Image (cartoon, rainbow, N blue to C red; front, top):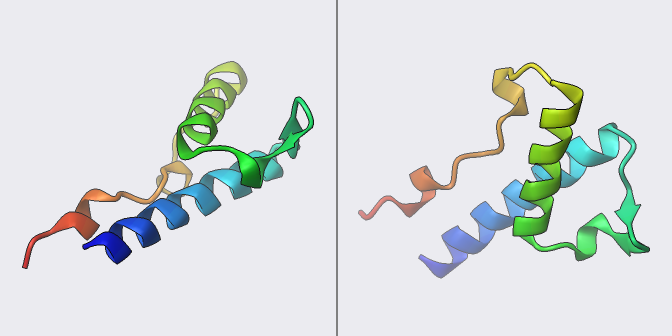
Length: 72
């Protein structure tokens, strides 16, 4: 289970980093995106969507981690 969660978090972080880079955000306060926590990335992405009024489309949603938590 730990590896699945780790992979899901990594996938979500990469998704958010790519979205922010595509909008021209590479670092803030001299801290590069890859150094940010998942929470920081999510917050910045929410702010970006709110300020830019980005229309939500299926590819704009971060990968869902819930499906990775399914108990078999």
